[in-house]
Image (cartoon, one colour):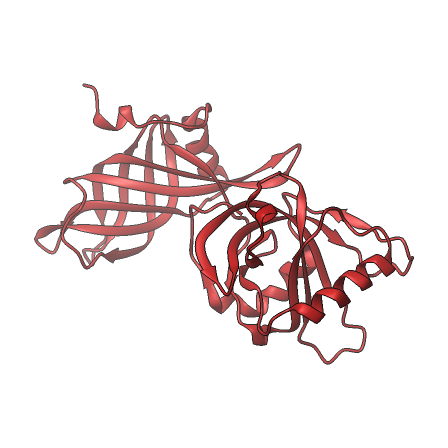
Length: 293
């Protein structure tokens, strides 16, 4: 019998059976929304857990958390949607995170002595949507999280310290109050950038420079200076600025005192310094499984 779930499109030419087995080996956290009997009636239930006994497309979800969704059923009886992510090493971009999202069918439900769902047996789609995800938590930014920040368009990376100093001094003289950062992670950001013709040109080159001085009483507090490439801009506007999605490609090595600047490539891995700094604001993070960067 042919299932409807067999017709789901796939945008990544890989064996999803292998992905399910990998999710089991790496103990990936799996989310499943399914329509199953709950207290006498069918309800949409969110189950979170880990895969066991993977055999091809069949697998058992060992349930760690269960929550009834406060809505009318949107999924057909014993149908399900699943999601999980896996990290893999890419030769060009370093470590990247891939999210797997698809449909399936509930073959059986096991409950414990208290009547709670402890396991569900699943038949997963042979094909599913696979998409690159952010590796790092993205923080909704507040101007009070740093002492100073700014963003500007550059034609090339500054080569010498005096070039960067002049560039930043000139920019600070014309910058408006507040912060240009909308949200940020170790790998990228959404920034308010002056609405100029060249900003709308997606060249693929790292031409957006973000600088930020952290909030710290330390006398050796080093700034964060990052070069990123534009991934796209949103229709949102604010004070003659566009909201631009940026992927960080290079980070200035501020620990080297040489007049010639050193730019470290961080594409794919993100900034380890910035990642450490942002951890204190993880309470402001947004859960966005399906957006890149």
